[in-house]
Amino acid sequence: MTRILHRSSRSAPPVAVSAQGPWITQADGRRLLDACGGAAVSCLGHGHPRVVEAIRRQVGQLDYVHSGSFSNEAAEELAEVLVGHEPGGLTGAYFVSSGSEAMEAALKLARQFFLEHGQPQRQRFIARRQSYHGNTLGALAAGGNALRREPYAPLLADAFSHVSPAYAYRNRRDGESEADYTTRLAAELEAEFQRLGPDTVAAFIAEPVVGATLGCAPAPAGYFRAVREVCDRHGALLILDEVMCGMGRTGTLHAWEQEGIAPDIQTVAKGLGGGFQPIGGLLIAGRILDAIRDGSGSFKHGHTYGAHPIACAAALEVQRVIQEEALLVQVQSMGERLRQGLEARLGQHPHVGDIRGRGLFQAVELVADRDSKACFGPALQVNLRIRDAALKAGMLCYPGTGTADGLHGDHVLLAPPYIASPAEIDLIVESLATAVEAVTASLP
Ligand code: PLP
Image (cartoon, rainbow, N blue to C red):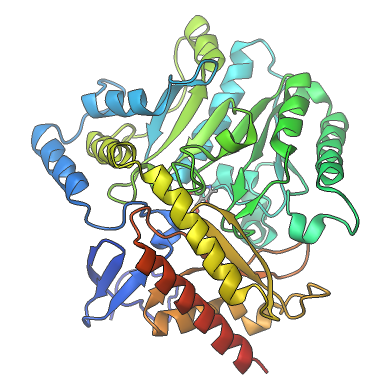
């Protein structure tokens, strides 16, 4: 009997009692290989001794101060590690406790930037359909995922509109080149600016590699340069949500580094603290910081646990380990191994439509028919069946329901820790392939 309102109110999930590296142990003694880091969170795996020790040190030294009254050394050092290194790049940081809080803060910061600038009419945000930016009401309103928005629609602000996502597998037309697809998406964004009135738009919001709702979908080449240009031409900000795909997950510290642009505001969470503590943040361009410094002088926002010393100390150590142990190189090479393994084992499978992603952020999209790309539909719950089959065999993966404009798509996402060994990567491939084969063979 549980007193907790779990995700399923009919059955309580198993109780996890300990975890080490990529392995989680349940109360019944079963060990599970964590191939998705929860929801792409545990970038160093579990129980990393350096991070555990950093938390111990911090809690003994300074457990908590309110960020309205004090800064703290861990937060200052974390900001030093994260920003201010590239000329013209992001120079400020703001720490919160989750990805949703980061998105709320990003929306308010963008709004305040234009108030400071004497442009109060910039009240609109453009995001993309099928996107997910968090579950609090502002972040949910920014998101364009119909399934997640629907029950709460009456509570969501209507300052948001949505354009097509960059989802080449389903939305790039037959015979359309990658460059033409990019041009079409940028033209759609331009048309949305024109429809709203270009000087009413505060920001365009996008995830560089779309995680939970599409399954590790990167944009076509040139897409982010094109949307950056549209934003710049109309004086709007570009907000990139790197809550899931950021902090090294795709092989560079920030996923946008691979796109040849930089955002004005970036949200981060998950891999920032690697799950050792709840922490999220904003990384902020200098001109936004300047506008506030030269204007009202304060960001009109704040949470009780902002820049929490223990959370910042944990995140600081996670980031130091990634740097000192050159783990981004590891993400690139193990990411390549994971991708090649998936291609080799599942590339020709009749129900695998697409294998995509970057670094240690890879997904498999399942289809009823490869040629027509027909989806299985929601009743079959193919993604959940695969998750359950993998779980039975001892591995955790992350099931997703990318809805391709009105369709119910199934994908399974993998996000192993950056410290995963070649043998563990191979085991992940084998376990997922076995689960996909077993489930698709058993479908009615
Ligand atoms: N943004 C993206 C892209 C996410 O994937 C998520 C969570 O999955 C969030 C925001 C919200 O983060 P959190 O669950 O920490 O509030």
